[in-house]
Amino acid sequence: MKANFKISTGLLYVMILCSSYSLPSCSKSTEPGSEPTQPVAPVVPLDKAWSFESTAAWSDEFDYTGLPLSTKWGYDIGGSGWGNNEKQFYTDNNNARVANGMLTITAKKEDYVGMKYSSARMVTKNKLDALYGRFEIRAKLPSGKGTWPAIWMLPTDYSYGDWPKSGEIDIMEHVGYDQNNVHFSTHTEAYYFKINTQKTSTKIIPTASTEFHTYRVDWTPYAIRGYYDDVNVFEFINEQTGYKAWPFDKRFHLLLNVAVGGDWGGAQGIDDTIFPQSMVVDYVRYFKMIDK
Image (cartoon, one colour):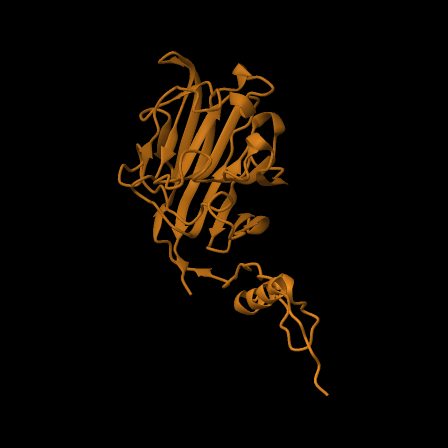
């Protein structure tokens, strides 16, 4: 027996449309033979367990006397406050010296080009610019209210824009009013301190200003990891969501400085009786990452 079907023009149009364009609303995934829509899997970062060369590709052992080697170091110079209302003028002459196998960066209480303190901010820009690798610095920190030493890294080319868009890596920061509490941080457009999203870890080092300690970063495409005396204190994994979270796929260089006062270093004032104060550095070493 034949069944008689009468199809309206409107219904016929819907059937043709469904057949031609496979609209999801025209069928259900529960019907036999239909394929359910699969969600797009998120990108999962891959840690290739990168290692680092055992011999430093760049280093300064400070086994000489006088000014730091101009082939290895340059200087940021000025007294503009450096974006943090700092109170020192950074010089390129009498605040950084090498002797007895050590680099000494000294902050002094003195009138200098309109500022009340002088210090030094040394940089490896255009002398050591690296993409990935291990940076290791052995140092003894200053102490006293108003000191703000840092061992840190900035982008050489600012490919993603001005700070913090192109990133910052703080291997070591310390403020004298919070003695022995040492900070490792990274800053990006998505994660930085002015919007209270920064990635930070702290560690109490009871002898930070009386003994030498090793401050290190292991930087790979997967993560930035921080180590104090070879103990892992920090990890920031590449989320692979773009430069706003991870601008760390471009060249960076190293900075060593001792600031005085500023928004953080001077949050509890400056004790003028403590000066001069110095950060003493035993060595600076950079090891290349072994790619995989």
